[in-house]
Length: 303
Ligand code: NAP
Image 1: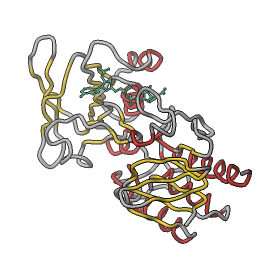
Image 2 (image 1 turned 180 degrees about the horizontal axis):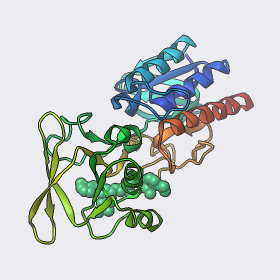
Image 3 (image 1 turned 90 degrees about the vertical axis):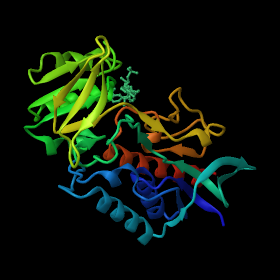
Image 4 (image 1 turned 90 degrees about the horizontal axis):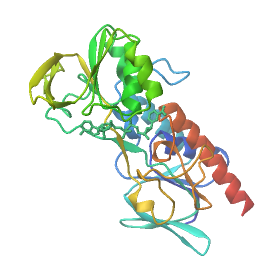
C-alpha cells in the first residue's frame, strides 16, 4: 500500500496536515506513537484559538481526529524508528512495519522540559503549568512564579504581568539567557520581581500550589515565596533523533525548516513545534500543517 502523504505525529500540526491532504484528494496515513492530540491534550482550557471561545484541550484534539478520520485518514498507533528513501519512494519505518509514501510530513512536536522537582507532575493543572498563554488567565489578580531565564520565561513573565498581581521571575543564574529586548520592558514593570541566582528546592502545597521553597545559590540559604501558580519555562525538547540521517537538524535538535516547512530532503516536510521557529502555539502548529500538506501535494503532483 502506497500513501501519498505519510504523517508522523498526531498533534495539531499533523492532524491539520491530514485534513488538508485529504481535502486535496490524497491518500493519507497518520502514525502516532502514544495518543492523538499532542501537547494540547493536557491543557484544561484552550481560550486562544481564533473562532473558538473556550474548549478543553482534549475536546479540541478529539474534534481534530474525528474530522481527519471522517475525511478518510488512516491512523496507526506505532513508534516510528526511522525514515529512508528507496529509489524515489520514501519509507517510514516503525517497530513492526514499513509504510511506503510519496511524501512525508514530520510533525512530532516537542515536550516541555520538566524541572524535576517533587510534586511537579502531581500538581499540573492545580497550579503548575507549562504554558502561560494557555493557562495564565486562570491566575488573574493572583501571585505567580515563572521559572527559567530564556525567551519563553521572559515572554511568559511579560504576558502574566498584564493581569497577575505579582510575577516572580526565578532564574538560576545572575543573567538571563533570553534577549535583552525582552528583559528591558520587565525591569520597569512594578509587579515583576526578578529572583536571580535561585533554584527551586520544593513546591509547597498538596492538592494545589501554595508556594515555593527556593535556595539562594550565593548564600546557600533557603527562603519561601507564596504563589498560586508556577509557570515552568525551562526549555523544550524536540524528539527528532530518529530523523537525523534523513533531514538536517539544528544544534538543539529541531528540524531545519522555514515557514515553507521544507526540510533539507525534497519531499520531506516538517510542521509545528518540531521545526526551527519562533512562535510555538496551537495556531502556528495548525498553520504549519496546512502549509506542509499543500507543499506535499505540490511535490507529489509535480513528480
Ligand atoms: P531556552 O532558551 O533553552 O531557556 C531555558 C531556560 O531554562 C534557561 O534560562 C535555562 O537556564 C533554564 N533552565 C533549564 N533547565 C533548568 C533547570 N533544571 N533549573 C532551572 N533553570 C533551568 O528555552 P526557551 O526559553 O523555551 O526557548 C527555546 C527556544 O525558542 C530558544 O531558541 C528561544 O530563543 C526560542 N524562543 C524565541 C522567542 C522569541 O520571541 N524570539 C520566544 C520564545 C522562545 P540557563 O540559562 O542557566 O541555562
